[in-house]
View 1 (cartoon, rainbow, N blue to C red):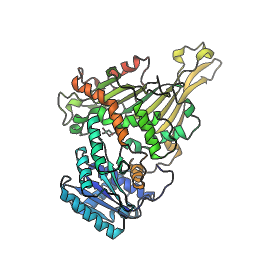
View 2 (cartoon, protein in one colour):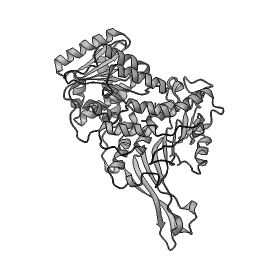
View 3 (cartoon, rainbow, N blue to C red):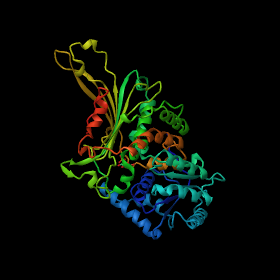
View 4 (spheres, helix red, strand yellow):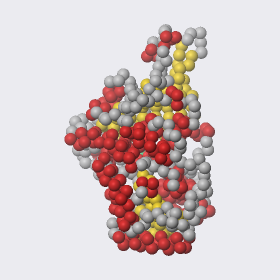
Amino acid sequence: MSSHRKAPPSCAIVIFGANGDLTKRLIVPALYNLARGGMLPERLALIGVDHNDKTAEQWRDGLRDFLAQTLAKSGESIDDKLWAPIAQDMIFLKGDFEKDETYSRLSQCLQDIDGKKNLGGNVLFYLAVADRFFGTIAGKLGEAGLVRETDGRFRRLIVEKPFGHDLESAKALNACLLRHLKEEQIYRIDHFLGKETVQNIMALRFANGLFEPIWNRDRIDHVQITVAESIGTEGRGNFYEKTGALRDMVPNHLFQLVAMTAMEPPVSFDAEAIRAKKAEMFRAVHPLGLGDVVRGQYDSGLIGGQQVAAYRKEENVAPDSNVETFVAMRLLIDNWRWAGVPFYLRTGKRLAARSTEIAIRFKRAPYALFRETPVEELDADWLILRVQPDESIRLRFNAKRPGPTMALESVAMDFKYKDWFQQAPAVGYETLIYDCLTGDATLFQRADQVEAAWGVVEPVLESWADTPPRHFPNYGAGSEGPTAANDLLARDGRTWRAIK
Ligand code: BG6
């Protein structure tokens, strides 16, 4: 996440999973958006690898058509000046990810294109494939000598989510990748870190003198982090049945939000300094007890006036599935800054609204001055970092209602991104791809971070595997989740903010 924009070095980008959804929906549109900002490498070749038959022209035209359809939604058409540097050298390699022969052809192809375009031997390998292929592809690239960095050339690997499905598999995957690549060659993506509002948490905390002095247990009562979705499984029943809400969202996306909020200030904006602080924070998380976690699964219900089906009725979902679509937890961080300040986390599908926010509740003012005001009416101050949608930062505090009496009311000051900044078209992958091309790993996860995060949820995964839930489904679609999630906070005398 550099503050200076520089053109990345010329290189080839090899996309494994060239025919997949990720390539057409996110990677190629992100490259196009980088082209708008003049942030593509001067010379670029795009090589797609996948197992089905396709010519380079078919691949290119398919991607172009999809991009055109997407742009058309905002009344735009493709600008050929921007598309040309992406499309100029597009190569499609049909190949089985598990066969050596694919990699010898890829090696030849890289040599040829480098000879033609002078790419300095630089290659970014993007694993936009199902996670079962991550280890295989990295291993085969290693054996074929394709990830060796010699003569100043870079060879980097982007690994998508999910990175493992528990602590053991994450460790095994890390070990496998690290057999062939150095840590600094591996870029583990968590797309939440590509969100501007998430990156801005660091700016808010560390570029202002105002917040950091109050960012601790002396002033903060608790933190609520919500990642609520109104969508269901969206045809991903097969994937979701193996994953569930905890694995899908918590050790990655939610924990990244926790880390951004709770990490200690790094000594610099250097990737290693920031990642070390995040890993340190994860190590300070208090082991989760079973009473600290609640799971749920949605029943049918109404969303936006539309009747939607229960999870168990979704496509490719078992009619007696016990997979959770909601999880809430109470997390404690055992360090000087946060001791005694609970972080309440929740995420779920088919909730009342799509809403991702970090809400920081400050301690109440000593109310001696307002003796006439019952304490329950004197609202505490909140700082709400709204990640999506309606990206904003809101400060809620008490003000005097005009009139002859000292009556108080909670009011708000808002900073809305759209009021201050012109929104550049973005799919959320631009910064991540650009950073990888320029070798900046700040927004990517290091091996120890990933393992520490899995380590936190591991006891819950283990115990859930042994104890099937008794009351699934336990929340209606369109609601705010199961009542047990409310009980989790009620025990501490607190309530969740409304999901809206
Ligand atoms: C993905 C999960 O990683 O993140 C999905 O697999 C989830 O289940 C998605 O819907 C949420 O991301 P975003 O950017 O739409 O909030």
